[in-house]
Length: 421
Image 1 (cartoon, rainbow, N blue to C red):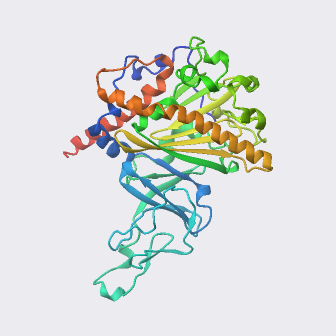
Image 2 (cartoon, rainbow, N blue to C red):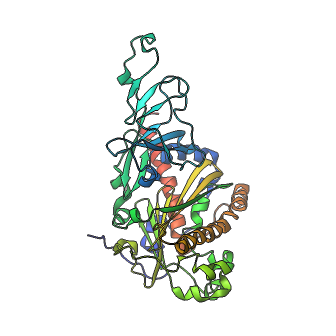
Image 3 (tube, one colour):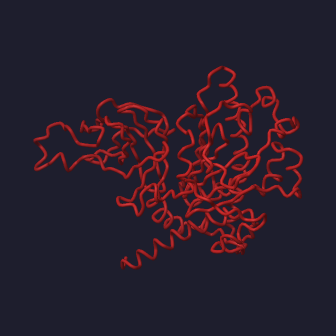
C-alpha cells in the first residue's frame, strides 16, 4: 500500500521540515579538504551506492568495472552461474595486481566466460570469487586456496539497480536504507526501458554543487532562457515546482508538465520540431502500463516529471515513458565526475531511434548549461569572503542535501569518539 504523504501549502515547504531551519547556510562542506576527507569515510564508505543496472551484466560471466575514488575502490561486478550479481575488489590476492583492466567508460560490457585469470601471475578465480588454480601451487608453503578468494563487497539489487556498500557490515539493509518513498517506485517498469545513451563530464566543483542544480527550479528563468517558454522566462513569473518531499536522507521534487509548451517554436531547436523530440523526451512514447502512484507523490495535475534523489549521489528523473539517471562521483574536495544515462524503450522503428538520440543530445545540452557554471561557483565559494548564503523556500532540497552530508560526518565523528579512536 502506497504511503500517504502530507502536501504542504504553497510557499511553506521549510515550515513542514523545521529541523532544516530557514536561515542562510555556509556551503563550507563544499570547499574544505578536511571535510571531504571525513565525508569519504562517513558517507562514501558507509552508504549504499548505485553503480550499475542489471542489464549491464546480462549473462553469466559478463562483467564491468567501476572506479569509486571517494571510497578508494576499484570494483569488479560480475554475474555468476546462478544469476546473482556479485561485487569484488578488482585485485588479485597474490600481490595486488589488477585482476582485470579497469575500463575507462566503466560501462562497457565484457565477458570472462567461466573464470577470471590474472594476466600477471596466472591465478584463476571462479565467478563466485573462489581461487580455483594457481601455477606451481606447491611452491607456496601452507597456502589454503579457501583463504585466498577475491575480496567481496556487499552487493544488493533493488528494482534492477545494483548497489554496493563498502562497509563489510552495513548499518542497514539496502531496502531499509532506501525507505518507503523510494521503494514505492519498484513497480515502475524500469526493466522495459533498456535502450541507453550515456555520457560523462569531469567538473571543477564539489559534487554537491552540481547536485544542487537539479534540486530547485528557481534558476531556470535566468539560466535556461533558450529552452523554456515565455511564461517561464519571466524572472518574476513565480515559476516553481509543484511538490518537494523528504524521507530520511532522500529527496524528491516533482513539477507539472504540459504539451502546450511543445507548440512554442521560439524556444526549440529546429531538430526538435522536425523530430518531435527534445528536452522533454519523445513527444510520443509507447504505453508501458499503469504507473505507480508513488511516481507523483504530490498529486500534481498535469504531472510532468519527478526527480528522486537517493543519498548520497544518485538521481532518478522519471518522465513517465522514459527516465534519466545521474550520478555524481567525487574525485577531490573540488572536482567530481558526472555520469548521465538516458533510458528509453527499445526503438521499434528508425524514427523512434532518431527521436531517442535527439532527446539524449538536447538533454545533454541542458545539463551542460548548468555544468558550465560550476567552476565559477566553486571558485567564488573558495574565496570564502561570505560566511553564508540565503536559500528560498523552494530550495529546501539544497538545504537538506548539505545538512545530510554534515549530519553523516558528525555521526561518524561521534562514533569514533565513543569508541575512543
